[in-house]
Amino acid sequence: MSAPLRGIVAYPITPFTDANRVDERLLAKLVDDMLAAGVHALAPLGSTGVLPYLTDDEREAVAEIVVKRVAGRVPTLVGVSSLTTERTVHHARHAERVGASAVMIIPMSYWKLTDDEIVAHYDAVAGAISIPVAVYNNPATGGLDLGPDTIARLLRIPNVTMVKESTGDVNRMHRLVQLCGEDVAFYNGSNPLALAALVAGARGWCTAAPHVIPRLNLELYEAVRRGDLDGARRSFYRQLPFLQFIVAHGLPRAIAAALELTGTRVGPLRAPLRPLARERVEELRKILVDLRVLPAA
Image (tube, rainbow, N blue to C red; front, top):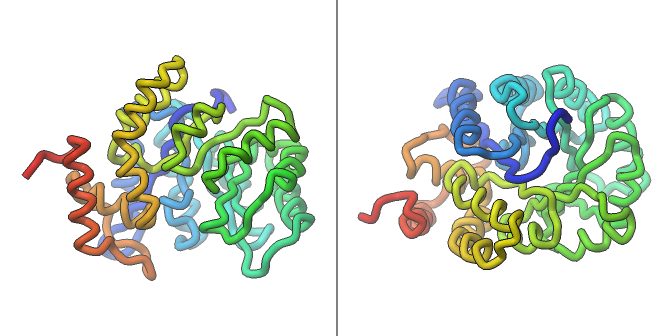
């Protein structure tokens, strides 16, 4: 990568038109907004980007729009996960071709994969491209939990250089350091544990929250970076209700609702996903009022 991947790694939602097509113009605007806010990297086609609900053509369009819009100003980490190794390789090669800085892979499978199958999967993808590969561990969505020993095996594959851990278990980072050394590139993917992970040494925080509260996200990261733990705690606990809410109610639903409350409609969710229930929207509105993102009624 031309620039190190660290700091606030923002995950753009994939917006849709009323005709249920990817809203390419709005996606470009969302990227512009987060870049203007000062995020350190962009990661299209993560959980918030509803990767599993997109066709191959849609996935490639999203990757290309985001990477070209970023235009090298910050690193881009493109999600390329698929059920088969062949399709994952296909999307990884496309991401490299359009100029992505790195790709991210979560094992996706109907049948529970063995460790050897997981290692072979990553090895095949990493061997097909020359840009770095990030291991994404999120058993809540992928259904597979990659333990530290398995991740340590993956990190021995050339090009596999990063780990995004979304289990919310910071102790896994310490175990990885024991297994692989202090140079492990570890990134937090659990919003409610952002403070603990950053204090423990995570290089960055992967989050969709910059759609709504970028200043607070950046404030937390910078406070930890300069060793201001009191300031970091104040910033974190102020934004924690929002972070807990978006995780509890599903990132695409919650982020879409938050954007609509703040004046940006990102279109219908891709079925079978449905919008946030009305009572939850009102709960979210109160959180955003408390954060001064929205004015008090």
